[in-house]
Image (cartoon, rainbow, N blue to C red; front, side):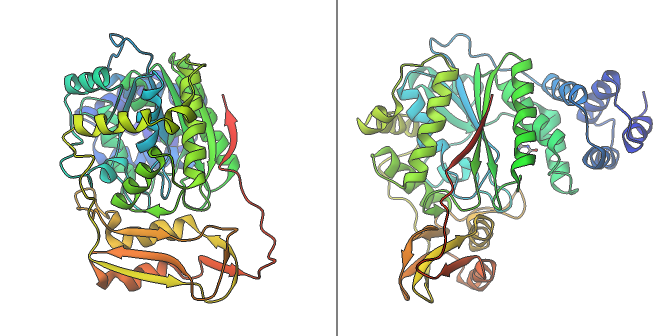
Length: 425
Ligand code: URA
């Protein structure tokens, strides 16, 4: 087998054979295929696509590049959730302990943020003492004792994807449905969960800007999961406007704790409960009542135990940024637009996100929103509070928001979008 013939096959719009796929993934993981050769193949796939047979084989080859975890010794059924990433998407934080409180085991392997979307591990690391890295044995212990664990994926899980994703990130080949679907599903299948709920975001703040592409990504992933014996369901959810009223690490932890305490913004509560119901259903726990577990404090109790099990202090004061800047409404009327991408980019420029994988993030940086689309606002009222330790970045954050927070007349036509747009099973 030689790599140039594999690249030529895809460059010329041919179908990669199972042998070609198995070989190229294995040879790239071992370092025999060079980064420049894989980046050429990734671009050919980006431009010419892969069919369902190729995607399934590509995913299987990435799973086979590393270890597979096994949770079959746990007394509870396992259920996991994966979000394709959005602005203000802190749902994993209340969701994992909530689903554990209802009887499932939630092995939530999460990532760090890159670009305008935040990462779950960055958010949790704003809690003093909390550690993202656990050995496989320690992860299993937390799952057994608490029922949920949120931690970094170990290096042994789908190493081919780890290498390929880093390469795609710097070669303009991230936004390809076959490559995204195989990347996400190889990690989730290797993780060994029995059931999986996918939250596929749609809108300006998401990878998938329109419903047709989101549907295609969701159905590709559902099919991959199902073919590997993982009960998989996808919800398409709105990401035209940020989720909740905060975007930024410690700010989002604070809002998640509000939800666990029985309060918090309605869209965050609604999506947390919708995903919890799907996870519990997929895990065979059809009689569980997640709304009750939020209201009676049992989800909060699981959160506190989960944070402590990873060295964190659930009662510690969360970091606050050194500087705040308030953006006010320039006129009275109805808030018609609060664009998710603009808010994510502004939060990133304030220091909540990173430009390169090795960059640090500011725990306190980000944006608090004081109104959401559809709300009535009056001239001079605060719309946003920007938080940062680096106030010299404020003008760049404000530039990102320019034209993306719009107030229309009081009687402006406004159609509220539901959080959950579609379900694909
Ligand atoms: N998340 C992943 O894990 N992989 C992708 O390709 C895109 C998002």
